[in-house]
Image (cartoon, rainbow over all chains, first blue to last red; front, side, top):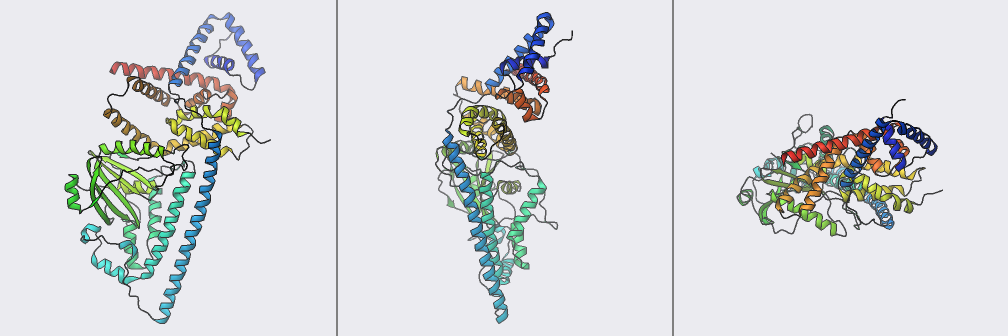
Length: 382
Length: 167
């Protein structure tokens, strides 16, 4: 008579522990096996081995079991379902409102421009384009290479461009807001780690939304919105900086409003305005900045007693914070953030945080941008 | 006849959390995903609620695994630093987390299918439910479990042997 193989012996023991739906088949098979075991010492020895493997496997899995915790009530599930629906409704309302507002602005400006053309008013305007908000007292070299001549040309160019850019920003912010909210209410997407091409296409699309139509301002805004655009408007592919990590907070069960996006909470810090040179001396090292993005502000301070610098650059119309400090600060921030967020009733921050750790330093990038966009910016750090 | 999800929740939630924990290796996240599964279930009426729940849980865990790859590396980075900074952590706690890490590494040495079948069995599903979930024949589940269990035990033994040799 043929012996019983290991798979059947496992199934035999499993069926005793947990009968499946086909009870009559189980009983029949069990009878056959037991009849054989009664006559076959070899199979009995194998059965003993199989028992040991089953027990050992179960005990190993028990080691990796979650720590027992009280089961949340079903009311919590219902409350969470209600919040999810409410968030989706608010997102749709916000998006419609923003689109409506943007459409109104575009229409009004367009009609005004046509009217001006019809009655012969010149294109002079003193308002600078939105993207070129200059820092207070820095040379052009400090603001990502935007020269005064280019600024003048942009100002003389088209005020319509500024209005269109503002309307486009409203739409983008509404869409960005919606994307963040929708992403939070959706399950994690299978495409959470887009390929380089897809990420480049997304940033390129963002750049196109931000760039106004007329030639001179378009060149300026396009350069700022997608500074790595070459002739084929694709981002240069680079390996991520060494030690690139993403700092995140988990969704908090039972919180009134779950944490919607990845974030880190900074303690209250007193920042002092400074210039790049002073900041470098304070940090005892070079200041990390994203090439070709205008600088909005530079400040010095201290995080957990470590000298720190807060640099803010513009990515289009979105400010991107680069908080730079000693690497040891990161672990402390993460631990404190998780502890603080667990205790909070509502999440108030939106946006993403990415951290680059290298050579004993950490650079925390924070912005109201999807995490993928922020990662792309982080990869551009030299 | 519509499903009373509160009853299903009471009976199945712990198994779901147990299953998800071995997928995402984060107790809080496992609980959160388990809740999310039930949120999605509320307006569904599947023929087999339990199997449906585990299918959704598997999909959520898979999506989660893809999106937290960097997060996991970060958590490891921070954990190392935190442990270094707190040398007076109780030995028992450290030992338990070390044992769990070894089991996790042993589990990761299994093929995805073998690991899935093993975790579903451990989560309390029977052969028919596992077969429906995985697309395998019912008659193949026993063989798959035999292989998965043996591989887990052998892999863990190998890790323990290396650990002892290093220590």
